[in-house]
Image 1 (cartoon, protein in one colour):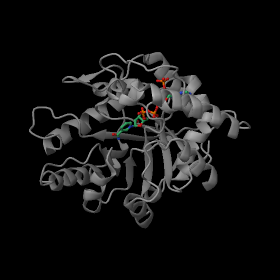
Image 2 (cartoon, rainbow, N blue to C red; image 1 turned 180 degrees about the vertical axis):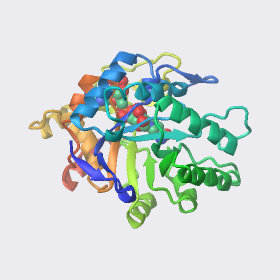
Image 3 (cartoon, protein in one colour; image 1 turned 135 degrees about the horizontal axis):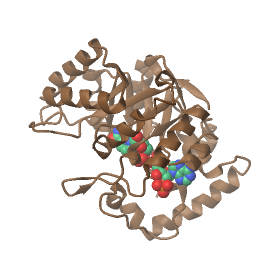
Length: 320
Ligand SMILES: NC(=O)c1ccc[n+]([C@@H]2O[C@H](COP(=O)([O-])OP(=O)(O)OC[C@H]3O[C@@H](n4cnc5c(N)ncnc54)[C@H](OP(=O)(O)O)[C@@H]3O)[C@@H](O)[C@H]2O)c1
């Protein structure tokens, strides 16, 4: 597995890193589906073991994935996998507890302790603000940042991360937080990173960058032959594109084009979709949600950036 230096963390991580949202299983927050259906704990553990074996050494989770279940699955493998071999990231911000805001300092304290317990570790390598909603006047930011810095002083976390689905929201607070690593949403269909202020910021500050949902939750692989309906508790039930016949048809068509263009690669479709994201990100990795051994083994063939021409060609297929 190819590796990069994750910017100023100076840590070497696999260009294809492991996203473990699905390991939390089916889940709701109020009426909103926030989990994944069809995940089996045995598959999750087997995938972690295989990821370690193939050199996928950076694992991403969050306190909220399955309300700690994803973290606990990770915490259950240290009898086999040396903890020091893995760069471990988790997040805080989507569990409010009894407080008026997600980033209330006491709630952050509760959550960091819960994550350490679930992960069965003394230290979290990378601890993210999961989103950038720090209140209408960003009034919760200063205290939240102070808590993060305190966790670092206490040795509970090593590096500070910042994430959001919306790059503009990240840019509103990025200078105040000055994160070591940024985690934005990016895939070849929804891609505004290439010419973005965020990319400039990352380069100027030598930050690490980890792209999430690189397959748009699996949609881009073109494996679906017709629109799909996911059960309650599965986040994908909210993603309209899975129900759009024209998008499903286009994904099938693009799958064939990728297979033709990259036919000499063992995973031509994934190579086109995933490795396109590495072309302009020398301090970057992709957080790919791998649910089982088969998906890890496919991921292990990836991680070498496409040429700029190939990456531009792939992106052009998904302009819709
Ligand atoms: N910071 C944030 O707010 C945030 C938000 C979202 C995600 N994330 C992180 O990013 C990670 C990945 O994003 P994601 O979970 O949305 O999904 P994703 O990586 O875009 O897609 C994952 C899906 O792609 C399919 N897939 C993966 N490997 C495959 C392979 N080898 N062959 C065929 N299909 C394959 C699987 O679909 P099937 O299920 O159909 O098998 C899998 O469930 C998450 O796990 C999480 O760590 C962070």
